[in-house]
Length: 282
Image (cartoon, rainbow, N blue to C red; front, top):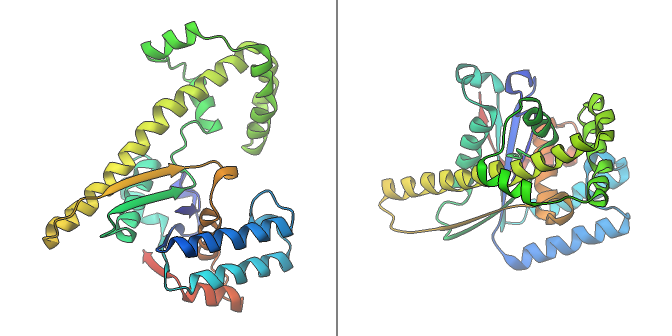
């Protein structure tokens, strides 16, 4: 599962928001998919697949590979295309709450009647994202007692702190937070940043993932109840960083962008779109 559009500032998005899920029903097909996409990565000496970094020739080659798999009957794709204006009446809700409701609905629709649901997604609920860490630091929020005790009993050595400096600098630059880069020369600020990042990663990300899982489970079980189906289910949700993601995420990221940009003038993209199930929410 992956998404496109500005989900953090729903009413600032001018285009439709997109949420896309892909089901691969057969392990053999999934391994074949992994192999072919890895060959594409190795052939073009890429670290991972990102459409915006490819020239037109490579893009076409990649889209033909995607097209090959989306026409396979063992692979199904469902995309929600959502007019952000429908959220005007729900401005009291946080964007992540709205995202969770819609993502849970999409996943419950895709996974209905599956006994073991194994979800991999490019995590939207990333509370340890750089903007959230800065916001946490500026709000002067305090850690809970357990975490304060951990912080007081742990020591981050200078090598470990400085090894993260370049990583944080790049994230600040990518998110137009350059004003904070000079602060990284202050050892205390860098130290506080790393602890706040760790805290949010452990506390907030873990909590939201469990809520996400329970929301999907509740939706599916309610449908079972309405239809008189007696069945239990297991749900596993995995968030993986870019370097560890399967090529399934790469494909669904491409498909989400295809639906988002909707380049119907391109015959190949038009062909891909025709093989997807797209639901419009206006």
